[in-house]
Amino acid sequence: MTKTIECVSPVDGSVYATRAVLSEAEADACVAKAKSAQPAWADLPLATRIEKVKASIAALNAMSDRVVEELAWQMGRPTRFGGEFGGVNERADYMMSIAEKALAPDIAESSDGFERRIERAPQGVVFVIAPWNYPYLTALNTIVPALVAGNAVVLKHASQTILVGEVLAEAFQAGGVPDGIFQNIVLDHAGTERLIASRAFGFVNFTGSVGGGQAIERAAAGTFTNLGLELGGKDPGYVMADADLDWAVDVLMDGAMFNSGQCCCGIERVYVHHSLFDAFVEKAVAWVSALKLGNPFDPETTLGPMANVRFARTVRDQVAEAVAQGAKPLIDPALFPADDGGAYLAPQILVDVTHDMRVMREESFGPVVGIMPVKDDEEALALMNDSPYGLTASLWTSDPDKAMALGRRIETGTVFLNRADYVDPAVCWTGCKDTGRGGAMSAIGYQAVTRPRSYHFRKMKS
Image (tube, rainbow, N blue to C red; front, side):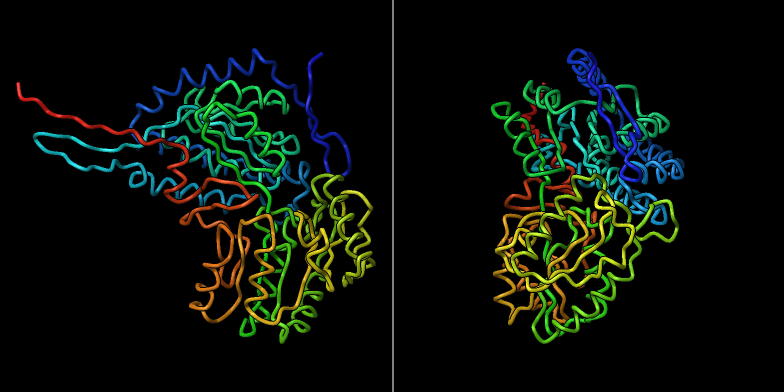
């Protein structure tokens, strides 16, 4: 019997899409096709590859109405926010604009006697395992530089956003990317791990859970396959005594609640200097209380359902445990009658929280945030670093020198000052500890999808 993967819509609990899982033979054929097509793609001029990728992104933009509707059905994002086209276009345009410089050879000598240089060679076939929370942005973070650098790409998307890969395949075909260079495939976990273990790919990029990353590492063990892993996060914000309070509340609460809290770099815990704590909490409660939870197709909705009932259950369990341990919930659930005990989940702010509570240590990935007062920078630093994760940290102060000095002591991939929850394509997107390894965006993003190849030529006169 053919295995299938279902996407259950969080909007109404219906099965929105069903797709058949590839057999082993079908999956192997896709990899073989990619390997066969890749050398000719890599031989094309860089400008030609960029032209075709750029045309593909334009084709994706032309499908915006379809994309926005399908995203709402698949993972619950309110249609009022559109798709992910702002970020997609910004990141794709930037990565293509730096490609020539990022991929340029490093020439040690070019003389009559010697040619010594390092070039960036494509990895060959790049495997992208993409998540559901920002299904276009996260996938294209790797796909764009991989294709531009001369790789073939095989994409396996999350079951929750199973249609996204099909849309991307249509876009790359419309943009003129040759057959076999970009392929979307449907696999289960076992099929995914089998391909990785067979050394089918030159590079594997995975965005998802820590457990998923560990499974990828186990599958790749002994193959020496290069891996990029963006895993969990528990990103903190620290509001210092001289912060712009209104700006801090606005950005931090948006960072905690946007996309129903389902953001890789979403704010999950906030530490506030004791002198501002009461005022910050009061304003934060007002901000969150003004959200509207509801059907994502309602133009008034600002908070849609979580992508899956089980994700909402995790958040509910964390909140309930914290309250039982002494935390105080500040958001009145009566303000959010759409909370149905399932995927539709009311937001919550917790105070009187401690790091003994799961909600302050484990990834929530939902619309809940804990807020704690701190007496000074040292206490805030200790709390920010008291986490198994390290993706981003957000500092709020009018003193950038102070922020820089503190930021260098935070165990994290990115330090923000007076902003949060943003991926800047000009700087490396990376993490430490259980957040994973590797880097995307910036010139470093090209290093991930290529490998160094050295040339040492002694020129002999005939």
